[in-house]
Each structure stands twice: as structure tokens, then as C-alpha cells.
Image 1 (cartoon, rainbow, N blue to C red):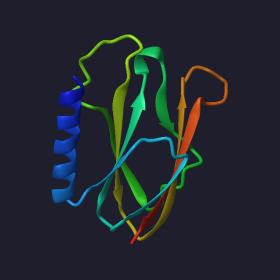
Image 2 (image 1 turned 45 degrees about the vertical axis):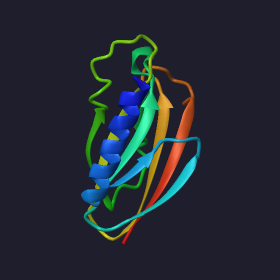
Image 3 (image 1 turned 90 degrees about the horizontal axis):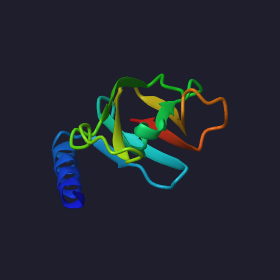
Image 4 (image 1 turned 120 degrees about the horizontal axis):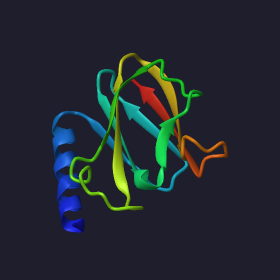
Length: 128
């Protein structure tokens, strides 16, 4: 399964480079700075555990003036795998629509719980 996942990520990376997309993978950095060209699509990839109720949520405090949210999807290779407590890859798609800066704040949490999120990430995106 890990081999298929690595092959999938390689194909996505090659495809995205040829389409002038920018892919940023989830890691332990709490803050990321990204520079993209106006008109480029930005793909943000996060690991989540939706079968346990945890998912990434875009904070209402995010400044999305220069970015347009397109969609959020689960990696197609993992969508049909009903593993309780298993991780999947969420891919968030945005498009740079104007020159400027946008800060995207993501929280990793269960929507029904009224407690602080388990994790948070900040993406500082500069559109040129």
C-alpha cells in the first residue's frame, strides 16, 4: 500500500509541475511561507483521521482575499478504504486570484467538540 501511495504522490507531483501548480505537503512546521504566481493553483495536503472525527478546518480568521477556495477532497486512492481510525490525505485546492498576501489558518479538530484544536497550521501565501 505504501508503494502505491508513493507512486500516486510522484504522479501528482509530476503532473502538478507540468501544469504549473504548487503542491505543499503537510509536515510538522507550524508556519509555512509560500510564493506563487497569480493564476496558479495551490494544493495543500494534510493527513487526517475522519473515521475518528478529526479533520482539518479552515479558520474563519483566515485572510482569503487573494485566494479562491476551489474544493477539498480525499485522496482518490484512499477514499474507499474504510479503516477505522486510519489516516487519509485531505487535499485542499485554492487558486491565486490577485496579487497580494493571504494567511490561511487551519485547525485539526472534531467539529462537534467545544475544546481547543489538537493542532493548527498557518500558511502565509504571497501572490506575485
